[in-house]
Every structure is written in structure tokens, then in C-alpha cells.
Image 1 (cartoon, one colour):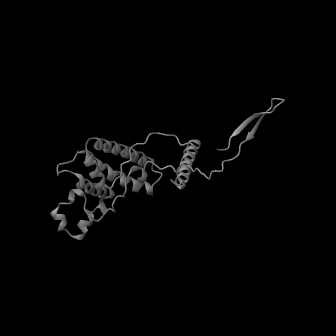
Image 2 (cartoon, one colour):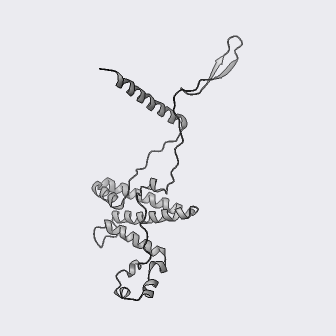
Image 3 (tube, helix red, strand yellow):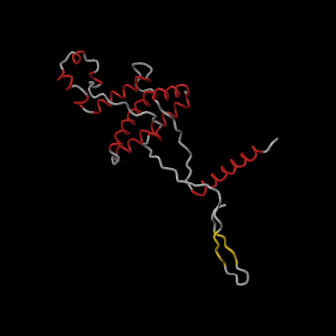
Length: 211
């Protein structure tokens, strides 16, 4: 079907001639698939990014402070996440995800809470890596957290599938099991595309045959 080199022995003197075969008439074009980075949300399964951080709120440890609620504007500004740093706002976003899935107020170590905490860290690092694509340490840390979360999700999927589906819905995640490794090769892909094209032609021709 495709271009090949055929060796022909010339009759008489035994000279081997290489003749290029004819090209295929099939209109099949193969394009190498685009490589998706390990930190990309398409591969990690995060369907939604981290919600915009409200930097005007106080950190998590001062959320229930009655004195801070009645304090003046300047004191509240000093005790805000905008003044104290972005990581305090990230803690608030992490706690919001944990509150969605935790079983009770004393639930700190369950599998669902760990997955929610990792999800907040992953989405925060994804936003950071978009702004700083040369930060190799963040990329390595992001890949490690994604692999850990995938192991936790696999464990939960094995032992409690209903809770697994409920968790994916609440955290807006999509589970991608680890695919078996297969090397991307042009010839192998062209064979599969040709087989698929032949099946389509057969189905079209057999559909026209009257019964």
C-alpha cells in the first residue's frame, strides 16, 4: 500500500536494482500527536482552575476572631491576606475544598481530605507555572503531587466506588488511569488508519447492497 523499496535481480548479469514502489492512492494523512505536559490540566484531570483568591480576607487562623471583625479598617488591612502573603489566601482556598468533602469537623486525615488538599496545591501550582514556566522546582513538585493524588484516587476507586464518584463530582475532577506504555510509531499508526479506512469503505458498500 505504501512506498517501499523493492529489489529486483536483473536477468542475465545478476545486478540488483532498487526500484521505488508506487505511492498509495489512499487519502490518509498521519500527524504526530501533540505531546501533553504532565502538569497540564488536560492530563491531570482538573476540569476547573483554582477560584480567584480573595486577598482582602483574614488568614485562616483569624477567621473567627471577634476583635478583628470590630477593628478599624487599617487593622483589618494589616491582618489581611493581601498584607501577609499569597500563601495564606491559598490556605483559605484549600480549606474551602476540604470543607466540601470532610465527614466531620475532626476529619483531617481521611482519603477524601488528602485528595482535596492535594487538588488545591495542584491547581495553585498550575497557576504559578503558567506565569513562571522556567521554574523547574515547581514543575517537579507539581508532577509528584499529581502522581500521589492519582494513587489516592486509585485506592478510593478500588475500595469505595460510590464515594469515588461523589468526590470527583464535588472537586470537579476527571480520573485518568495510567495508560499502558506504547511507543508512537508512524508505520504502526498508518496501518491502523488504513485498517479503519478499509472498514469504513466495507460498511458503506455493504450498506448499499439490497436484501
